[in-house]
Structures are given as structure tokens and as C-alpha cells.
Image (cartoon, rainbow, N blue to C red; front, side, top):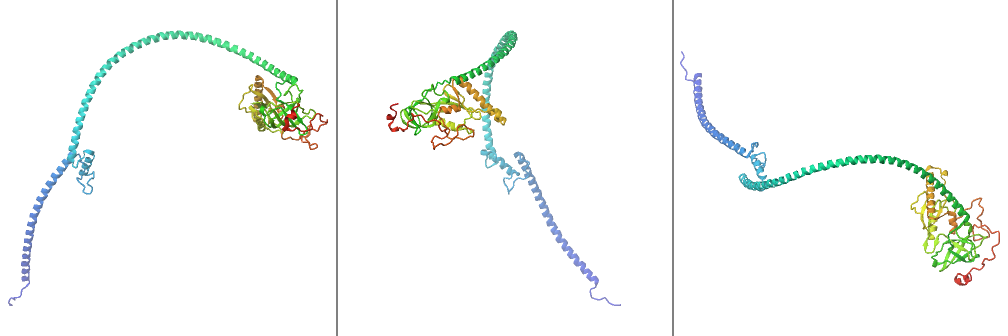
Length: 495
């Protein structure tokens, strides 16, 4: 049998491992137990500190809730925002905002602000109590005044009721009177209506009589005007007087000298018609006119030189012949009225502006006029007007357009009115051609028209243009020697 060996076997190694494992476990267990004991003590201490902290936190939260309640800021979840101290969502920020809202009462602390607000409130209460006391005094005075006024009002009401009763009585009496008056008015109105009907009937009868009488008057006026025109044509009376006389004639130079000058306010360019000294009157008819002259130079107070602008060769001008123009009177302008077309040179065109100019140059005035359109700006025929000058009147039947016919009718109506006014004031009505002859006017432009009796020719280089050559010799009493105007006394002294 074999003997045991001294070398360790698996059992030994197992035992050693077990012993070492046990030792390690023991040491480890001891160490864990000691750390656990320390941790347990620390945990108990931390738990105790946590409980104390929770208790303090709960107390702080309770205090903060009470503070929020007192401040009325229960909706602010945060107490303070260090990033934004004035944040109104925090208790501190909202409190500061409330403090700033107090204005001049705000202090650096909420308690200080509250105390100052309280003092202001007490002052306001005191002032209010004073105002209330004053108001009570005023109310008592008002009640006393109302009592007095109520008494006066009651007295006035009584008087008003008495006055109303009296008024109703007066109204009733007045209504009775008005009713009686209404009945009387109705009766009078009935009578008035009856009288009005009779009056209307009488008016119609009188109107018919008036129209009949007016028709007869118009007929008589027409007959009277016709008879007057025929009588004027037969008698050819004129109340015009000569303006002056011819003192000397020079047929060689075609000049005459007249007894008017600057003492008579005569101006150059004045034209005159010339009448024989045996003529019964001037401005009766154009047949009496033997020539026309135009003043060229004023020599002295009663002497002027004039040129012959037209002459009847069968009735030559001679000393003593009368001169006349309706345009001129010594010291005053003559006034005229015009109606109708003004054609001065026979060319069929209106020469109204030239006619105005010719009259203005001679010191005359046109104070009433109907123009070619039928307008009469300043109607006023009166006794101050010398003549009513009748130009060519239009014929509405020759009008091509209705507007032209109406214009012509207007001109004719205006001419009719001017005739009536002229007859009313005794103003003489003369045709334009007669007026031009009376003033000694000669057209500055002559037109030759076939068929005219007098041809406008130049005979022997005569200076008198447009005059038919004489068929008889000139009168032997023509002066052949031109007088010297500078020696007027020697020339005119014997006449």
C-alpha cells in the first residue's frame, strides 16, 4: 500500500479558497455595515433637516399667502423677479406699481406710503365732514326758502285760477260777440259777392267801351298824324332860325366868310346849310337849301372863313344868305335821338360809328338811340331833344330767318314808341337825309351807280367833284377877287 504524499491536493486548495473567501466576505461585510451605519445616521440627520426646512417653507408660504391676502395680490405667483424688479406679475413689482400710483403720496416703503395715504384720507374725511355740515346748513336754508316760495306759489296759483276763471268768462263773452260778428260778416260777404259779380259785369262792359273808345282814339290819332304830316308837307313851317349870314363870297377860291366866330363859341369843321336871303324860313324843306359850307378858320369874334363843299349852280351863294345847322347853338350842345339804319354814303352799310363821330366833332350829343339790333339802352325823349332822326327802317317781310324778322320787328316797335314820345313832347321828327342836308354834311366817299341822274365826272379839272357842269353861265355878281382875310374890315365893311 502506498503511503500518503506531502504535496497539497485539491482539497487543500479548496479549503484555502474558502478560508480566504470567508475572510474577504467578513471584511467586506464589516466595511459595508460601517458605511451603512454612517449613511443611516446621515440619512436620519438629512431627514430631520428636511423636515425642519419643510416646516420653515410651509410657514414662509403661509406667511406669504397671508401677505398676498392683505395686499390683495393673490394672483401673483412669484414674489420677486431679480431680473425685472418692477415686473407687475410679481408681488414686489405689483406693490411698487401701487405705491407709484399714489403720486405725491408715494414713499420709499409700502408702510410709509400707506401711512401717508391714511393721513390724506383722514384729511379728506375731515374736509368731507365740513362740506357735509355746510351742505346740511344750505339744505336747511333751501327748505326754508322753498317753504316761503311755496307759499308765494300757492298765492300765485290762486290768483292764476281766479284769472283763468275771469279769462274763460271773457272768452265766452267774446265768442258770443264773434259769433254775432261772423253772422254779420257772412251776410256782408254775401252782399259783397253779389256786388262783386255786378262789378265784374260792369268792368267787362266798361272794358268793352274802353277798347271801343281806344280803337276810335287810335284811328283818330292815325288820322290826326296823317293830317299833321300832310299839313306839314303843305305849309312847310319851321320854328328854326338862322344861325348866321354869309358876309362875303369868293367864287374863284370857293370860299365864303360868315358872321360867326370865337365869341359865338364856333369851332372849325362845323358845317352849315345855306339858304337864300329871301327864303321864308330855314329847315322847312331841303328844297330851300342852295349849298353847304364847312368852317375852316376862325378869324375873330364874329368872323370865320368857310369853304363851299356843295352848291346849286343855278342858285349861287351871295352875301346876306342865311346859314343854319341843327348841330350847333352858341354855348350849349344840341341833343338828338336816332332810330333806324344810318347809311351816310349810300353803300348799303351802316355808318353809325362815323355818324356819332361827326356829331361829336361838332359838339352835338346823341342821348337816345335804337341801334341796328333793336336795343335802346337809355330811352328818354323829352323837350330837350332837338330832333328825332329817322334812318332807314327794316322790312320784316324781307327777312330770311325768324330771328332776323324778330329783330326787325323790335326796331319797328322802338321806332313807333319814339314817334309817340316825340309827338307827346313836340319834338320834330325828320328823315336822315334831310338832317344831313340841314347840317351841311357831304359824304366823304361817293359811289357811281349806273342809272343815276348825276354822273360823277371831272370837267375841266374842276375842283368841285361830282357836280353836274352848269348849262347856264354863272351870275355876273360873282366876286372875282379873293379878299384878304387879314384886312377884314376893308373887305366886309360895305356889306
